[in-house]
Figure: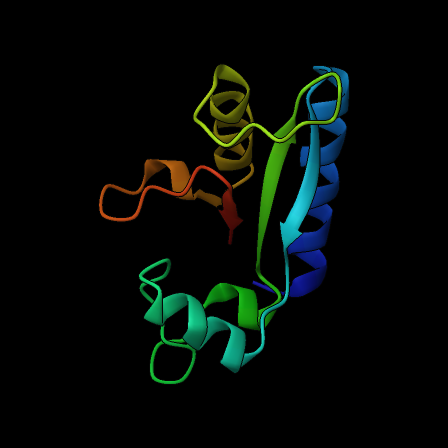
Length: 110
């Protein structure tokens, strides 16, 4: 999977969200090995950034946060996260909201 395909998929996700009046912000895209290691040490990732690289380190994952009508972030699972996750999977991607061990509704990767 290359970055250009990932970016096309993300563009489609953005259009899908706009069509369904779902607004979101990007909270994380590329991560350095140091940033990834910090998240691993905090228990927020299963990837340490060195031995086990994150898809973020390869520009193949993005984290988003849906915002409400006033622009406030929504940090809990909602129907809109489910919609975006389902659509992302229909494009061939993996949605972190399906993970049992580290449920991550904000994470979209290929």
